[in-house]
Length: 207
Image: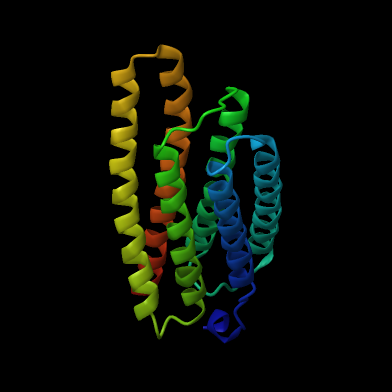
């Protein structure tokens, strides 16, 4: 009873929105990066800077959660949202770092598809994450979550085709390099869908 009388801490929404906006900027840089034939290092450096900023905001949010008594919804959901938002940045950065580490100079066509999917998915997440502020009006939030599910299925198809093409070419070294890059990009899309699932659950729990 006493707990219900205390004000809830809503600053978590600010943290969520900061990280998803960083994710969007990372995806934009990654799309720009995939259109380049040279100077990959400049874009990869910028992506790393964004990833470090996402880590910083994620840590701030986690520390705030430990200090907050009353939260706008379940603590486990806040923790999962925070972690998955950061996971998008981590996996996108990892994919870019692999390209640099493996000394890749020519990008495969499937990477453009992944870049476009991630760009669309993170932009839909901007709408979905902002929708958490008002759980009484969730139609647009639900539509964005549905779109993210569709994009994840599209990413799965792109990944299957990409790996199939790699094995048909039969270059063992290229297979190893690109399997890691594609796996990281697919994982980034998977984290987008994980976020959509959590947001949908929050909507149901707070209906």
